[in-house]
Amino acid sequence: MTSARAYPKTALALLTALNLLNYIDRSVLNAVQPLIQNEFHVSDAQIGRLTTVFLVFYTMAAPFMGPLADRYSRKLIIAFGAFAWSGATLLTAVTHSYNALLIRHTLVGVGEASFVTISPTVVADLFPESIRGRVLGVFYLAIPVGFALGYPIGGYFGTHFGWRAPFLLAGGPGFILGALVLFMADPPRGQFDSLKETAERRTVVGLIRNPAFITATLGMAMMTFAQGGLLVWMPTFLSRMRGYTLLQANNLFGGIIAADGTVAALAGGWLGDRLLPRTKSAYYLVSAASMGLGIPVMVVALYNRGPAMVPGIALAGFLLLLNTAPLNAAVINSVDAHIRATAIAVNLFAIHFLGDALSPWLIGKISDQSSLESGFVSTVVATALSSAILFYGMKFAPQVAVGGKVGTITH
Image 1 (cartoon, rainbow, N blue to C red):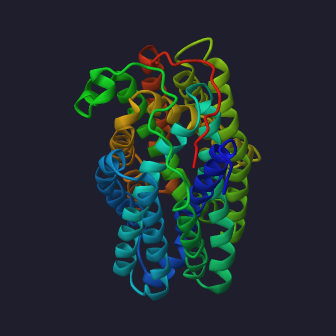
Image 2: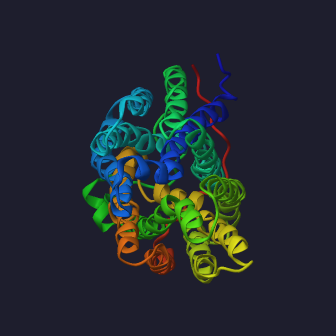
């Protein structure tokens, strides 16, 4: 049995591992898209629709998961969600048509919605407000690293054993990690929150009058549009437009995302926490600045065929990922703990409906008519909008307590 003092870090490690597996499962598809296209003879728009369908059902399921988590055991919902998405991933073994693959993606989306909606609220209740940026940096480190691992896993096993093989490899561990979650204690909701309850913070209806939540959510939506589109299409872009083999493209982009994500997720959280004693808008500031700086770098990365392309992709990736931890901390701190899961569900619905549920299909549609380079213009515009919204949102940031110790939970 884990000691009370060690429990928060142990729980964080378990939830981060499950989050890592979650994003490996997602990015495997991006790595094997050309192989699926060759087998099923589908267009860029159709292959982009797989991600869109996944995210549509993911966002539709999220609003149901949030209220459940605010009322009932969060660990049970997380565990059963892990079982559901792992089982659906294993169904890839019997997927032999494009329509069947669409159905498989809808099931995975519903399963993953439970974990992504609920787990950040558990992480937030394990640690004080003043270090949530760093803690969420660790938790959301799983996003870039998971995506990064999915590319070489998908690229290697997909090219050697067929595109179904990496999905089967990614499906099994979810059952083990989900079972371990069942033995995890659920921390008291809001045990470290310092802000007083207000109508805007404590009620679902109040969210529409909560400018801190709204600006963080809309800024994150535009960020998600850009990130989602680039993550889905970059390996295909490199192999089709820049002369790399599919395996080389996956290894290159996966390596860049792994390096960028590891440093950026931790650095963004640390920087936000470091600036928090000086300005209440630290989380918004770090996110807005990183997106703004990323705009010219993205242009170099996407439209330069010379030696600056790879460094440009690396630097653009770092800047786009630097905001992950502080922006999620801004969302979590903008609402009261007792409606936090519901608020995150609303946030997830908005960011994916306006973001990466749309961008992969849109980029693919433009690509069918013109080129992937033309499709990527939309990601540059979305990045600029994200930066502008977050700079505006700085004045609405709540003043949270600075200082505090990691809590303990008795078993």
